[in-house]
Length: 173
Image (cartoon, rainbow, N blue to C red):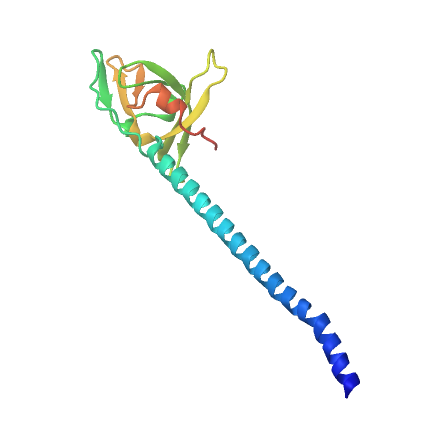
């Protein structure tokens, strides 16, 4: 019996610090897990904020569907024409002007839906002598078209400035 008690005492002496250490390790693991959860929550909040900011920025940036038809009237020698009366050939390479009647680019591509109705005009803006131009896609409805009295010249107007167009995302077909 004495031997049993001695063995038990020795075992307890050895095991007790291990049990105490086990509680400390458990507490350290819980603390590390809580720290990791806090870091993940913080990162998720930052990602959520970034997504919200990006979404808001995208909403506030000029979008091709948000460009308004310019409220301008035909200048002398030009008459307003309905978009349906203009052919693709007339639109291709037509010069585009802003609301101040300043040349800002030209139409480089015309996009139509499966029924053949024109939906998007791609305007090349910026650059110099055709180098460095940026293609920007805009809804066809956002343009106002004018034809010269002689019927030869077509002017395409949009309310957006050249700077606003240059800040829009590049059109990719």
